[in-house]
Image (cartoon, rainbow, N blue to C red; front, side, top):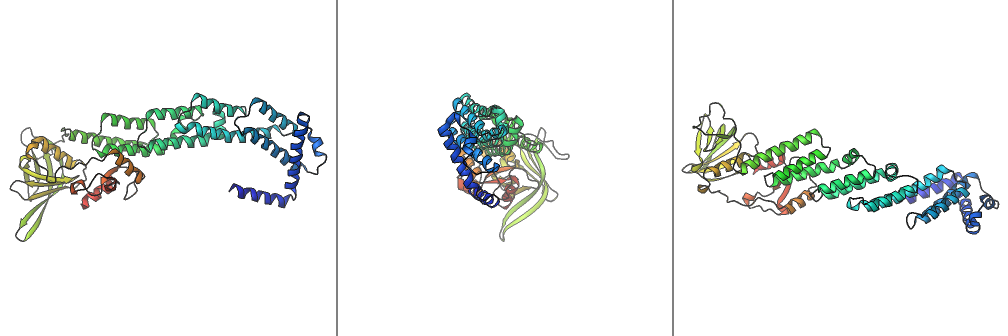
Length: 448
């Protein structure tokens, strides 16, 4: 693109000022020869005597020669004091305006500063020596690192820091020390905390969602995981809705942790529920019961609508058409997921309960209560396969789906899902794990 622009510029110049390119080239050659032979005794007026030119030609030629000398003296890095002095003499001899000299110096120093900055920030840390090198480049224009960075390299500095943050979080781990280093580097460049946060917040939000999905994968939130998520919320500029979302997910995970540890939270008993003395309720909700009977004519489904309660000693189904009370001791087989529960009861037909309202913890509450009641007399109908997805698999799956739901592309409420359920023989391999949002995951569960 730059070559095309250069060609167009030359074509336009030739059209509006024919012969200028040739005249400028001859003037440049004469200026170069004059400096080589006369050195400090160089006199521009003497050089111009033998040449035909106009003011525009002279302006272009002197500027081009100064730029050429700038590039040569910067080839090996920051020009030394004697080289800077030489540039000053050249600018004076060529009668270049100070504003133009300053602009040319700024342009070449800006490129060198950007290159030096990019190299220095590869590890996210600006060391004292790297900062000194940047100060040397800035001082070429009589500036400081902070002033120069804001004037010339602010956008690139932000871009580099954003890239470093994105690279760090792509691994699924953001070390707090790295974040401190990035903040220190931003401060050294004159970037405000608000500018840095604005630059990295989109990546930080995606990273927080990644951390949350990782935590949800095993169904348990540890104190360390909760502290880390709270640190992310305190550190980055997340909106109120996103913070509320993380808090609600943490609340759900805390409840799940209580359930898995054998301490499911109680719920107030509904009015009219016939409870035994000291019996506690841990779930109550609208439910459909399906009683499946194996008759001579074949299997039949008998559906009933009502309310289901899970207590510390039994499963209670209140219905006008088919009330049920099943003690945990009578259950000889069970399976299910989310809001579905299938029971095999001693001397009874198979009974399935489906909650009307989605509840990701319903089935887990039942398991916990049943195991607390009499774990030794209970067997699971489908065995007890391992649902734990290794961290390296979760990381590869997250990258494969770019942190989005495989079905609808949502970027929140994400969960790692087994394509073929573990209960049906599905594995924990990359090929059998996908990212789904909660809505799509529940829809899939309803179809299984």
